[in-house]
Length: 255
Length: 255
Image (cartoon, rainbow over all chains, first blue to last red; front, side, top):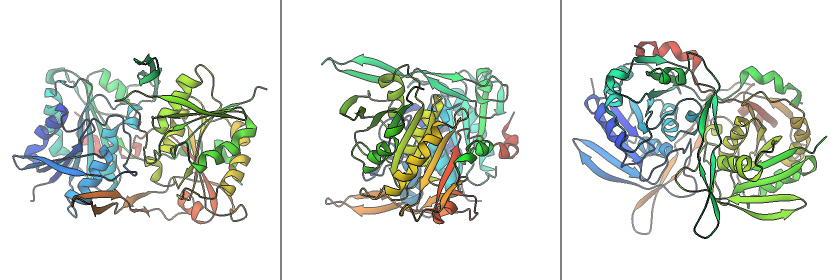
């Protein structure tokens, strides 16, 4: 059997510790190509670069792994992989991460990591985002790497339905702290109180996004429940946003 | 009854013709506040600004309408409205648009216009994105304005379920060309062949995103069908991305 072709992308940029944890977890399972943003691109959602040209540059080759960086977004990294670097080759697995920070609940909607995984699924690749619940630049990826390494061969052996990706979140802690792996659904919630005002040296106000996640969904089948109880959360993700259950609420607008 | 409070945002920036079409359609129905990006921010998806501070500046006041522009994304515009400009006031309706270009099918996932509408729904406002199927900067918004003006009082009288927004797409053409309004579901599809290589004056390659939408869903209940047949498409939008129907495909990953 041919070695699987694995594309690794992220939203934390080419210097992120989590990127090298992802490479470490994947390197024994196929041919690896890395394409990542040249700056930190957290919270980019499904942004694409439409108003300026994209650039891409190889910055390293080591142990047979080629590393590229681009001025594009996480989603652009996947497009550049499919269209430019790996032109015409079938990508067996897109891995996005390992992200510094959670992509559970509604954070999934804002996540560049998961948007890149979703983009991979649009083109028919198995596609998976990995996130560790630790925002720190020097987060400890030991347990995340251990579990990613266990999961990657299983992911390569799994048939993914069309346009379905996986959102995998890993709790903070040691390998022994983690109790197991659960399939979960997205926790209902929202981000609250999220702009902090400061005054610059010229007396002008500016604002930083901040806030916290409000969990509106205290049930034991959610990602938040699993993570709070030290389980890894795996969530199948789709992108039909139609609110089928509420069609009738808007029937009166038809004519 | 108090005048409704209406926040208008967009992704095409403060100079967009579509913004002024949106204001024209809404101005008789409430107190209007406009907050828009200071540059074109198409294709931004649900991006938020996390790595630099946000600025906001009033640039105009006319007919009682205040206009602000910001260095933030479309989603940031909604957050700045809720947290800074309209602090503590209940926003009755968030209108995003009128966008220059379609947000049907999978374009919804990339859309800054719809991400801003979704963000409004997270905070409990009725929230609606309007898009015209014409990317041109000098697109004719006559029919779009006419129909938006008809719909806005109906939208203000409709109870929106929690975290549900509307994606309204309007075909190109005259008022008479439009056959009616249909509730639709999101067309399955993807963007194909989307990077064009060019060479700059220094011999270095660069890439532009391009491509076309592939419609994989030829049924008469979709947004693409409605728009192709000259109907306005109204789509209720939700943000639980869990692929409930495919949970069993991934059961083997649990432990």
